[in-house]
Every structure is written in C-alpha cells, then in structure tokens.
Image 1 (cartoon, helix red, strand yellow):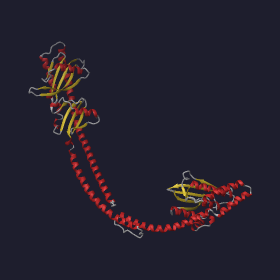
Image 2 (tube, rainbow, N blue to C red; image 1 turned 90 degrees about the vertical axis):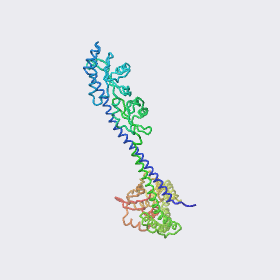
Image 3 (tube, rainbow, N blue to C red; image 1 turned 30 degrees about the vertical axis):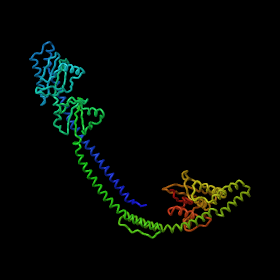
Image 4 (cartoon, rainbow, N blue to C red; image 1 turned 45 degrees about the vertical axis):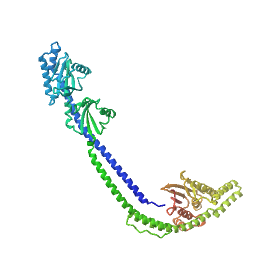
Length: 572
C-alpha cells in the first residue's frame, strides 16, 4: 500500500484551518463593522430627531401659550360678557374681538401667517381672523365642547384640510381652548386656532431628500405631517407594528429602509425618519472591498509560507527517519550530523545521546541482572537464617520442657506462619499492611525470647497501609534494631513510621537503643556485613536496582540517642 506524507497532510489541514480562520475573522469583522455603522447611523439620526422633536414640542407649546393669552384677554372677556348678558354682538364688538386676536397672532414670530383664530361664544357668534373655518361648524363645536369637558384647558385635534381660493387645499390641525374668566372661571365660549401643517413641516423639510424622508405621526400611526400632502391622514402601519412589538428600540428595518422614530414628549406624537439602507451603510462597501483584498493576500502569503516551512521541516525529518531505520536494523554505531536549526540540532544531539545511552544501558542491564540474581539469592538465604531457626526451635523446646505448652504453642504458631511466607515463592511487591502482619509474627517470636526488652510501634496511617513496597525489606532493619540496640534493664522502643512526599514514600525505623557510630554506618555501606547482621546493604542495593540510584536506604544517629533508618521508595 502506498504511504502518504504526513507532513503534506498536516500542512494541507493547516492551510484549510487558516483559510477558515481568515474567512471567519473577515466575516466577523464585516458583521461587527456593519453593527457598529448601523448603531452610529441610528445614534446620529436619533440625536437629530431629538432636536427636531424638541423644536416641534416647543412650537406646539408656543401655540398653546398663544391660545391661552387670547382666551384670557380681559378685553375679549368683557366684550363677551355683554353678549352673554343679552346684548347682541354688533359689528363694532365683532371687529374689536377679531382685531385683538389678529394682534396676538401677528405678534407670534415669523410664522403668524400659518395660524388662524376662531372664537365661538355661547350664543353661536363667530369671530374669525380668516376664512379657514370648517364648513361644518356646529358639528365641530359640539366635538370641541365634549373634548374640553374632561377638565383640560386645551386640546389638540387631528389634521383637517380646506380648499383655498386658488383651487388647492391646506392641511391644518386645531388647538381648542375654553374662553373663560381667569378669576370666576365663567365659560364664555371656545377658541380655535387652526395651525397650518407647514408649521410642523418647516422643522424637517430642509433635511428631506431622495435618501431621507420624514413623517410626524400620532400614537396610532396616523400621519399628521409629511412633504407629500396626499399621505396626510393615511396610516403608517409599519410604525404601529414595530412600536407595539419592541418598546426598547426606537428603530426597525423594512423594505431595505431604516425607520427611526422619536417621541414628541408632551403630545403623544412621533417624528419618524426613513433612511435608505444603501446610503446609510455606504461606508461598509469600502470595508467589504478591503476585507476581500486582505483575504486574497493572506491566502497567497499563507500558501507560500507553508510550502517553504514544509520543505524545511521535511528534509531533517527524512534524515532522522533514515537513521532510525538503520538503528532499527541493529546498527548501534550511527550518528546524526548537527543541524544549523536549533530545534533539529537538539533532536540530533538527543538522538546521538540516546544511541550512547542505549549502548550503556545494554551493558548495565546485563550487569544488573547478574547482580540482582545474586542479591535475591542472598536475600532469600537471609530470611531463613539457620541461627534464627535454631534459636526459635530451642526456645520452643525449652517451653515444652518447662511445661509451658501454651507459650510453646503460641511460639510455634507464629513461627509456622513466618516460615510459610518466607519459604513460599512470594510476590516481589506486597502491601504495607501484609508486610506489617509478617513483622507482627516476627516481633511476637522475638518478644517471647526477649521478654520486656523491646517494644515495636507501627505508627502508620490507614492510607499508607495500601501502598505497595518490595517484600522483606523491613524485617532486616527491625532485626538489627533488636539485636544491636538492646540495653540491660531498659525497654527499647522501635517506631515504624511512613509518609508520602513529592511522589515518594519515606519509611522511617527509629529506636532509642545504644546507637551506631558514624564509622560503623560508613562500614555498612562499604562492604557486606556478616550474615548475622541480616544484610542492610542487601536491602539498600535491592531498592536501588528496583527504583534507581536516587532511592535507597540511609542511616542516621537518632536524637537524643539511638539509630534512625530511612528507606526512600518511589510511590508514583
């Protein structure tokens, strides 16, 4: 089967991943830029609409103030009192009231020509500054009276229209207000101000173009003001739907247009701006072109760089592969020349050191295996020390002769358990709890021989008892502590402790016996001691063979007296 190049596959995958990453980043950047531009457009236009809404709100307030000034004028009130007292309105009174109203209107800034005033007293007399009054005056008056009965001083009514003398028509909204005495609150009629819709349109008409359009609508979406007068009194359904669905946003999208609206605070009206999305998002086109060019450039550069890097990596790896093939065929003398690249130089050095290490370990392994076999044979012989067996059997015979059958039976019980484990082909590693059981049998035998001479304490945590250690490594240490630490008329305490630290297990066997000089400690590690000492060096060498040179056995002088033996084993 034809082999495929892993490096080629890796770099193809890397190229595809990089292209996906570039595409994702470009798409994310595009979307982010789109959202940022949209937010900026919305924010800028919202700020503009807020200014327009403030101006329109002020315009309406000024019209209401104008209506208040006329409705509270004392001269008009006095004239209307005479009429309500039974005197019919004459021409002089008519002209007087109309003149006063005209004076107020013409004093109202530069937009006075857009406002007409009509006052209807309680007897049905009408005082007007123009002829823009609705043809159905009685119906309107009834509507106004009913609206003003709710306690409000004034009310604004929807857009109406009337035909002009030139054949066109004007649109206007009406401000109705009670005409009443300020002190007595006596009602004398209704004042109507017909305000031309142009008063509203002048606030936005200069901003209207092919890309932007403006509407003023009420809360039901009815158009109150627009540059196209034919659209007035129509309903802007999209605004109603958007305003009812989402109260948090002041914009919505429809038919490739962005609609932004802002409330005219005191009147329940809204100024709505319609902006073409194409014009609003025009800066996004430049970003789109830039991202496309950037993506193409990144693709070309990525392909070139990856091909060069692949070739630079493939050549040293090919050399390393060939050398490893030679090594696999048994050539242990091969070497790789140093590379000019740091990474491959380290690989070549490591490979050469590996070859040297393999050659060294092969020789060392042969020697270690030979030494291990000798040590294990010596260790097994130490466990069945003939002197120990002879002394134990002599003690049993002595108890029998003395008639102490119970003691003899107990000693024989512990001795048989000890021999069964020693003479069986036990595992090389055992749990500490099993090793402790073996030691308890051994200690029990020695206590029966040396009554009240020593005490062995196992100070081991429960979690330590389930750790595995090499078998038969603790008995030689305790045996030496018993035989060479005993003192006359003094109880020797031997403590067995263990702890885990940095993935290593430390077992400490300490006693308060006669102790051991530094010269004696050095002698133990320099040569094999007599068999009667049950080889401490044997234990030390066995641990080093199993775990390495960093592990083994150390002997220290215990404070204030005695000896301390520390076994360092690998835990994990």
